[in-house]
Image 1 (cartoon, rainbow, N blue to C red):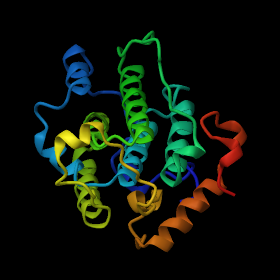
Image 2 (spheres, helix red, strand yellow; image 1 turned 90 degrees about the horizontal axis):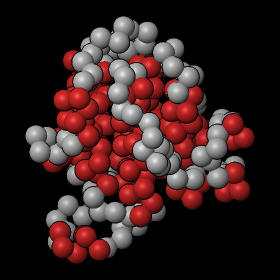
Image 3 (spheres, rainbow, N blue to C red; image 1 turned 135 degrees about the vertical axis):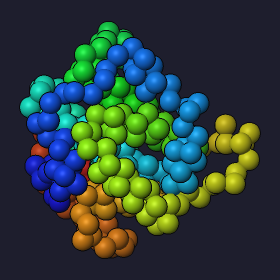
Length: 243
């Protein structure tokens, strides 16, 4: 899966491409997605069990669910695609990318059943990217809203649920968080270095025949990065990109 032109089979099965925009989108739903922490403790407890590179990989995969859902409905997805590419480069090293800034002056409303979900997705990704670069011990918590959003906009939610449940089990097993039992007060001020964590690739999330190993993951992610159009993506740091 060397580029984003290949639609993942699981996303095709979810009927997310070209399906009518028929999900609810109102102020209540927006607020639920912007502040998802209170009623989603079980999801939070799952997410905090995976490490940082796995979290960034999951972020890219979830954003891809959003990307395909709205492809054909708006040109904004061109920007979404570039952010997905940058996230995969960040898995190898955040130095390969520039911060995924979005709506820094809060001038874009979260209203509208197309632009609204994309706003929330991009804003969540902006926060996740920022915490990853800072080495925050609370990075994983910020994925909650993105998981809920991707599920909400997916026509066949059972397909999404099956995918996510399978992926999260594998992530916890193969890419566990290294500080699950760390003191919470120490975590507030500490900086976590994820540079030694094993790489994860797009194939892990979307290729059912992919056999995860350090070598296979490194080959796959390097193959993906090598196929990017660096000049067309403003989020890529050209001077340090993998070659």
